[in-house]
Image 1 (tube, rainbow, N blue to C red):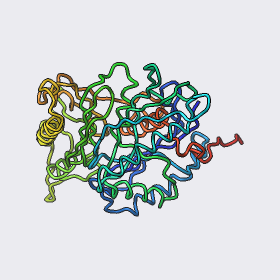
Image 2 (cartoon, rainbow, N blue to C red):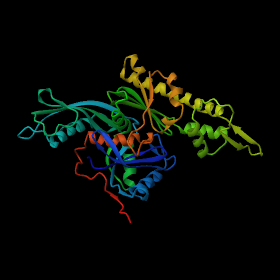
Image 3 (cartoon, rainbow, N blue to C red):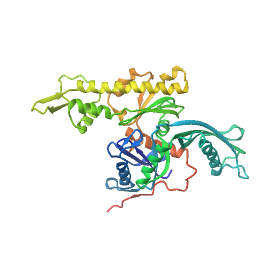
Image 4 (cartoon, one colour):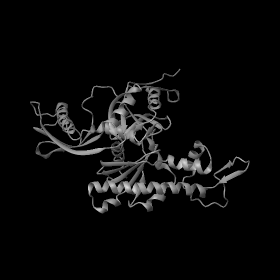
Length: 404
């Protein structure tokens, strides 16, 4: 069993934390939570960083009497939004150094060092996020998905994807985490982590468009063979619907969010017409709002979403000059915004994808779609161990309170 590791994601309005471990290709959750801090991040920019830092400080030491859990987090995996992400293909070869030609961590470090050194010359504006090995090749054509430690070979070749992003975004996210008292163990690009998690579900396709619908931003990624190839984003999220409900129904944010979640796009045929809500117009008159009004508001915002979504997919495919049939690849929705009732039925006829699916995590204790990226990071960290910090503890202390 892997030692527990903490994974953190800074959403636009809330921090997400999952503590768990990987066992036989699945993620097992010890603890998960979300901590709202308001609209503090906007498209990768921290508009109110002190709120996010405060949330990090609050989760550094957790005492949950309901599950008799004490948790101290000293370092964590960190999800990075793919803003400005560039992915490069790289291949390197080294001579195995041991006398018995047995591959050791030292050889893996040499390979990574070659890739890292090469990445530094690719762009002055971009910094390395992660090296994602796809295949390790040994003598006689033998290949492995994971580092072949202990195998015998004169040479070792790796084919890997190199994830690079603007250094400012990486530094801002990392510095915010460390300012809260938690050290950065490792960063992962969010859609890469999500794709790794989705790959564990045999019912999900291997080639698809990954659409992560957040509260303010939607990220669209191209995934082929369960591997991330490209990501783009546009400014639209579930809050756009909430804001329109507030505006049209003249109600507060909490109620607007409640009705959005409760009804979604409601197609139910009723023998009677019950109002969604009743409000005072300020002059003593009661105004009733019905599901058909709510449906019109939601569909209007979703039409804007669909326009941006289709345009973003077109942009991604033009970059890769793919055959037009790739436009019909399945679409998988993740993120909190993907849970809107009636969403899939409404958008399926309006996109070119043959099928539209919503992915929900299967890990007990974190089955909410908002935890997808955190769960994926725990899995990705296990699949491609960071050879530079093997000796570091992953979670400071994890104990159960004694019964009194």
